[in-house]
Length: 377
Image (cartoon, rainbow, N blue to C red; front, top):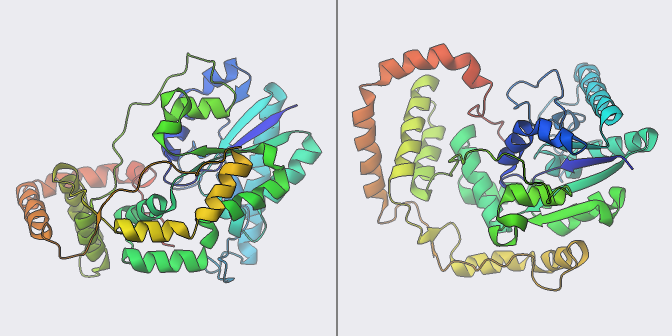
C-alpha cells in the first residue's frame, strides 16, 4: 500500500538537520521508491525543505483557552489563498504517488498544529488518504520535557526578539499550549486518527538512535536502515545561547531605543561571545531537585508512551538528571561574561560599517533564510 511518512518534529529535535538530509538525498530516496517532493510556491521565510508547511498553514491555530495565536488569522480574505495553497500541496502529494510508493513530508510546526489548529490538518490528510488510497505514518521525536522547553525558550530569545523570562515563557506556554509537553495526550489525539500502529515514536537521545546517529535512526523509522549510500550533512553548530548570554540577549530584545540594524549587529556579536566564552554548565534554569519535581508531573504519561507506543516497560527517557544549581541572573559569572562580550564588541565595532554594507547587499537572501526572526508566541 502507498504510504505517506509525515515527520512532525517535535521542535528542537534536529528537525532542521533531518530536513536538510532529506533535501540533499532526494535522488537517493527515489532509488528506493521514496519521494521527497518540494511544494511550491515557497512560503516566505520558510525553508523549501519544510515541505509539509501547507498543512500547518491550512487552518488558524488556537490555544487551549480559545485564543487565536495570530489575531485576524481567521479573516475571510485569508481563507481563499489558504485553501489554494492546501490544494496545491495535496496535488503535489498525488503527483508524487503516481511515481513512487512512499512520500516523505516534514514540518516541526505540525506537532502544535495537530493539537490546536481550528481544523486539524490530520483530518484533512486522513480524508485525502481515504480518497486517494494511501496510509499515513507519523514520525515524532520526543525530547525530555525540561530540555525541550528550555531549548525552545532559548531559541525564541535568540531569534525572535522574545522579552519573556524563562519562567514567564513557561507559565504562558503551559497555560496556552499544554499539549506540546503532554506527550501522551498529544500522541493519543494523533493515534485516534491514524491508529497507534502508524505512530512511530523515537527518543531524542543519542544512546537510543539506531545506527548511532539521528540520520540513521530516521532512515530506520522510514524502513530504510539497510541502505548505506545516503549522504549526511556537515555538522552545523546551532547551539543555544549560554544562560548568561540568553539573559543579556533578552534584555537587548526589550530595548526599543536601538535601531534594528544595530541591534542585530549587537546580537551577532553576542552569539559569537556565547560560542567562545565558558559555558558554566553547573547551572540550569531548574535545579536538580526542581527538574525532578517538574518531570514528576509528566511521569505517568511518559511511562504510558513507553509502554503503548514503544512496547517497553521502562521509563521513556533514560538520560540522568544533571546535578545542576539553579541559575539566577546576577550570578558570579555574569560580570565575567559581560566583560567578554564587551571586549569582543569593542574589537568588532570597528568593522561595523563593512558589516553594515555586507548586510544590506545580502539582506534579501538573508531574510529568506534560516536567520529570519520567528513569530512571537
